[in-house]
Image 1 (tube, helix red, strand yellow):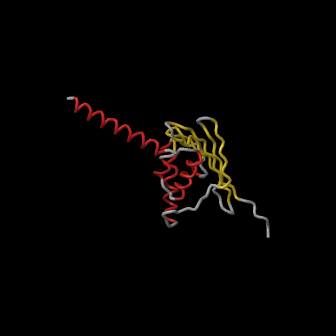
Image 2: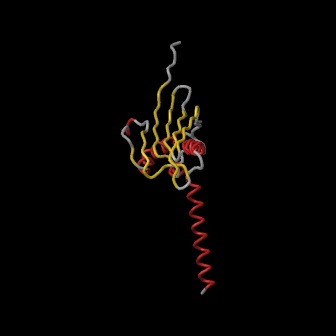
Image 3: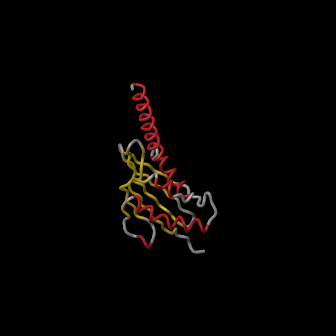
Amino acid sequence: MKGMKRSITIVLFATLLSACTHIAAVGADSPAQLVERFVAGFNHLDVDAMKALIAEDATAYLPFADNAARVQGKEAILSALTPMFGAERKRREGPEYLHLQAADLAIQSAGSAAVATFDVGTSEVHSRRTLVLIRRHGSWLILHLHASNLRKHVPAG
């Protein structure tokens, strides 16, 4: 009986340890690492990678004309991104479909919250991104995403 209890205890401990390792691997260890994973998720048009970075109660403002209202919740955000990711996959070749880089990254931290701002634009467009981050269960997650695109002024010839 003692041997069985010990075996059960070991199995339970291993299961809990595995679950904790999985939780830690899902998010990010630092705000900068989260931004890196966020940009990589977009570059690979990987909804599952994005899913791992977004808090369940997250909100977003996305730069889509047909979705101008605030998007509430992780699933709604992923549902809004999925068609765009699908369209881009058809237009481009992968596995890295986009070649975004977080330029001018600034991170402001305050305890278990942080704000990351950066631009993933091109020579023609500013693609500004603001991520409000929160630390939960030892990992950083996106609590709010604000995305805006603005054409750069090109002087006349």
